[in-house]
Image 1 (spheres, rainbow, N blue to C red):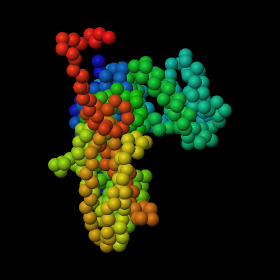
Image 2 (image 1 turned 30 degrees about the horizontal axis):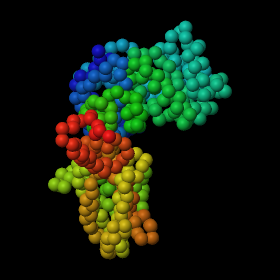
Image 3 (image 1 turned 180 degrees about the vertical axis):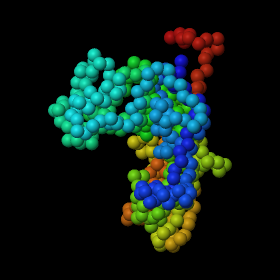
Length: 415
């Protein structure tokens, strides 16, 4: 039986181009039409969450994940379609919503717990459990406004987690607290999974999604792209999403720095793709398949003998790394505005798994001109490697010795 059924749900928002905050502006706007644009947050989304399952919802920012949870929770009314929830529901969408900063920690937990449906006969015990779980026993009678932001989030999460409901809706609640509190949360989620509680989790923590979720739904720009086994959907999302995202990020201005890219911008990567030998772009490859990494670079200023390299990683391990110096390739000089293409053929002699390519441009004195991590991602399948990262393509050739005439298998030669 499905705990939640979402049937052909669409939700559109109108975004005005102007915001009127003064009376005069509002009066003038009566005689002047205000422009706006429409945003399709959800577009004909249909899915089912089975009772007793732990389901993940993933996607880029703005893909409609939080909107979907709010529609399921009844906080937003869909423009089209319908949602059916079988059982009680507790939406944990905005931690701390309902807290009052002038009340004490104890008073806030009592108030928030009552809103979430704590049973009256158990409220004293649950309030004590919440405060202990959040590690705030010393601050039990302190006003909420005296707590740090981290303490506040821990308290809200602990309070919400003690709610009794058939279905829990969780929106980015795994990113709260310090390492010790994170361990507590993992234990709680493991216990909830063991109890077969129905949980829908929106998160960007894909490792946690794979760890806890039985099934995953992938949303992109309001549409349901894929739903199914957690590992398969997450790996597909990484393979498509990271490679597309990395290529789009190459359009930044020289000197722009981010978590995945840095360098002085003297020479920069401007385009790249991973292809099969026939030129088709790929992200899912067979073990042992020959691939071609194609790159295009542009010089912002004159550069003499730039060093080009690439690195292949699986998780936190470097699988392979090389560069033009090691391969004894002379790159010559580039003038400002020059572009050059790079073609790097290689064999995916790898075990099954998810891999990412990092590309680098540097000078001979090790000055980094452009470093792009997670530039392209791909998935290797079909390997017959039992353990490890590399698939060396080993073969077994069985050549039994010839038996004496008339001897059968299992018989020994008389001594």
